Amino acid sequence: MVGLSLLALDRSHDGSLRKQLYLRLRDAIVSGTLREGSRLPSTRAVAASLAISRTTVTDVFAQLLAENYLVTRHGSGTYVAAGSATGAVRLRESAPTAWERASLRGRLFANADVASRLDAKRPVAFQPGIPALDHFPFEIWSRLAAIVMRRPEASVVSYGDPGGYAPLREAIAAQLRSHSGLVCRPEQIVVVGGSQQALDLVCRLALDPGDEVWLEDPASASVRATFVGSGVRIVPVPVDREGIDVAAGRAIAPGARLVHVTSAHQWPTGVTMSAARRQELLDWADAADAWIVEDEYDGIFRYDDRVPRAIASLDGHKRVVSIGSFSVSTFPAMRIGYLIAPPGLVDAFVAAKSIADRQTSTLDQAVLAEFMYGGHYLRHLNRMREVYAERRERLVSGLETATGLAAELPAAGLHVLLPLPDGSNDSAISQAAFHAGVVARPLSPLYRRTPKSGLVLGFAVAKPADAEPALRALVSALRATIPGTRARAHRAAREIPG
Image 1 (cartoon, rainbow, N blue to C red):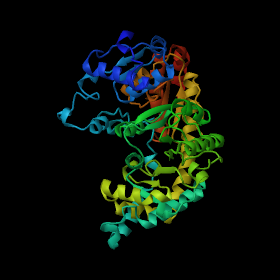
Image 2 (image 1 turned 90 degrees about the horizontal axis):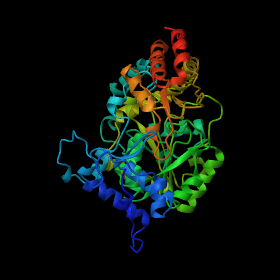
Image 3 (image 1 turned 45 degrees about the vertical axis):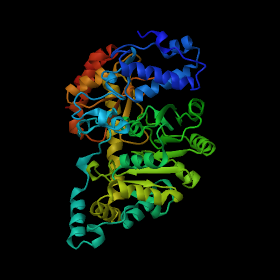
Image 4 (image 1 turned 30 degrees about the vertical axis):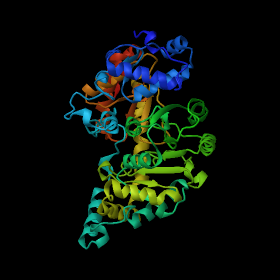
């Protein structure tokens, strides 16, 4: 356990107590005074010893966790991360370059902890974020691509508008208007290479290093990594049954510059932000002169009739940047997404897109535009809602029958959140499932403040014939690690078809 004497603060110093504590901990880690694997005292103990707010201590710990100086072990505490003493950020053992020559921002990007790297995105049973590739009408897509290429217009095969192919921007605007009532001009839409590029452009244009950014807690690892790489200070804000807790955010960081929310279907809890909470978030953003990034993610798939009104439609795009992607509604390899910019920032976003990569493939944009104008996209969405509704019900009922563990039927999206009993080691269950050929993402690493144990299970990717043996493998992993489910799971596993 780390001695609290190392953290003594100088109250006569001009700097804030929060900054002092952050620098003392960081410098002690980088210098090796705090060795790898050392356990830190609890935030309560540090706050009591230093006579400062526990919120301040929690905030400092969260920042060091985001920057990979610290790691948490579920149910055990907070520890100095392995490799954290090698420089300004923790370096990967496999790094092939001399890291002292990289920029600080470069090191932040390269060492951000991204759980959704390429090797973790294989289309395996229960992998979140992968659509049902077996149902996509590739024959129609191929026919449209052949038509587009037969006598291509110069605008399709030459340099095009960095903002995007005009017919596609018009089709996206029409789709958003009919789906969620979000009205925007086609010129406000910037076509990008997926939602990750949209976030990167937002970071470049809206944020400076050191700015405070609210992130939902829990949140996507890849989203968190993008903001960490931009050098901002991440402020984890808890999520409750109505969405991000705006009151908690105000208390922690009232002057934050930006907030990122998955309002239609929060990743990973599945909560839909309430209308009252949307207005509360807008009121805070107006008062703080902050930006709201509204990320649709997989909210386009809705299984009830309560399609929420987009936050952007409530403020007329004055301070809301909406982003979305076609990766889950078509197929991930397409790499086409969009960003809806406030009118006053359209030119800036188009310029940033042009500098980043000149333009998204106009050929792919043209094929997607034909796919949408021909009605194929809408028919595909409607068909997939039925397919996904059946697959989510099969997974939820199968889990409850096999284990007695209840997961709510999600109102939207492509994954189920399975809460686990207190004290369960979701990472160990995830590892056991992985060795059995099944992906079951642990929930607890997605938190930064108060981890909860659970599994994030995608129900879209696996065909019923593949899902049944995968469910048996998952049940075995649960049975081996959660004693309360053993007997029932053992009986139920024999009853699962296949």
